[in-house]
Length: 234
Ligand SMILES: [Mg+2]
Image (cartoon, rainbow, N blue to C red; front, side, top):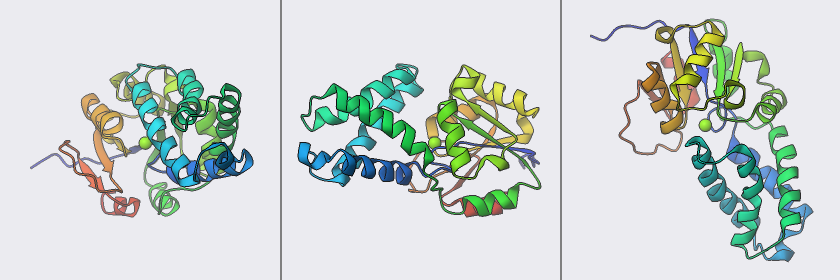
């Protein structure tokens, strides 16, 4: 029989876990696509633009999470690489798109299904926290614009901590800030490397949020494919 844990602190990842990154990002990209008439420059469709963004963005974030590149590199390279894939060589346009995307995207309010319902269910019995590899200014804006900010006692970003997930140091930083203990804390996130492996190596229980039901061999404490299922864990 395993030990029955009574959790007091729940740490949520933000992007792709509560904040619907894909939907918000696609909406922002759609507006930029129209504003800059990218179809006239050789990007055949908005869907193609979105798809290309997703691939480039995921690859840059993966390098960032492995500490291979900095935040500035993500910002400088993202649209440059996308435009290059469509054989558009325009540094000025790339910088404009990058700046506007960074201003626009975090103001989009879409959340993953059941976010408010489940946070309302949890908030009276647990202390809720955010632990994200995002950038402080951007993540603060997302929390505010999506009306999530009132739910969380603490918000830790990789920026503010000086470490990033999956490093144990950021989990230590987060529980210290929350005045929590790791055996009464649990991490919920969509990323097997940063959220799940990171928390597990640190010694925290985990909930893997896997909305696309991807197959994996990782060891997780709990797994859900919809946030509403958290109600049966807590
Ligand atoms: Mg995430």
